[in-house]
Image (cartoon, rainbow, N blue to C red):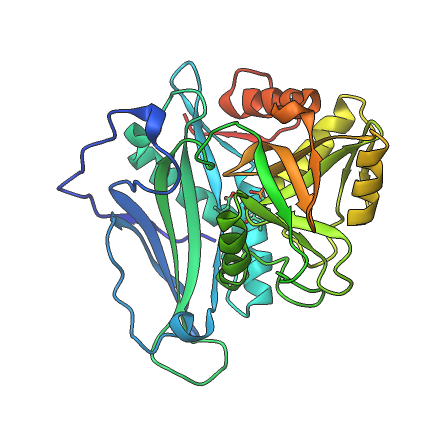
Length: 357
Ligand code: PLP
Ligand code: COI
């Protein structure tokens, strides 16, 4: 797809954050955003980079009433030589298109999406932080707009990309997280929209997460929606367990997000000679393995969360304390290699890196 990207410069740029060690996640936004519009009968049109700012949409827009919305998340890293690179952006663009198909939205050529990301990052180059653990987080998003309240796919769409300099997703950085295994609320069921990166899944997760937070937990681990028995994923990350020396994770059966970090860690672990398994894992298997000393580590994987070690898993009052509340050896090795590749400190043998400069 060859759509020209018009550039409208922001004449009033903001001050950049002074302290890169306290960026947190998703709080600061850069000076520009990418926007492209879609109209049924016309296709994609008016691609542009414009000053970051509010969008004007009709209050009757389907995104506001029926949540016809999808998004992505990926990061741009600054190498030690000052150059910039992205991690597997085409994977995000292709997942965006799979989400689009599930929510009846138009797809946008994946290579064009990557071109848009690169063009935007070239303009926002000075916003990419360099401290360890920092990156520029990109949030491609698509919303349905126009004025119509009938429940059917919209006729107008906006695809946009915003950028946010980011540090650690969890407030305590790499400190192991405490996770409640949720047995009352469910996030997704097979045949539903759990595998799509769409806003409704996150709205559905809020109540359980806030109730767990009141009891001192950082996140909830969802069980499958049919039997309430098999572990699925956490709000913003996939879960991996070290069970009897093997790296085990739930299969992508339609109710969890097929994480790009998940896929990369499975490949990395195999590359390092570790045995990996993608299969249903019941919560009782975890409890039994823990009692037998065979559940030695658990960690989450995600773009925002990177590798997030789990220090405590709790199910119906039963507690599984892992890795002495520290980062376990497998999680540490995966973190060091993944971040090393992402930041350019380690050679990328997999073709995951897309250089920008
Ligand atoms: N699961 C959910 C629900 C997520 O929101 C995310 C984050 O994108 C992930 C898993 C991890 O996916 P990825 O590794 O592609 O970021
Ligand atoms: C990401 O890791 O990119 C995500 O989208 C997680 C987000 C919901 C905070």
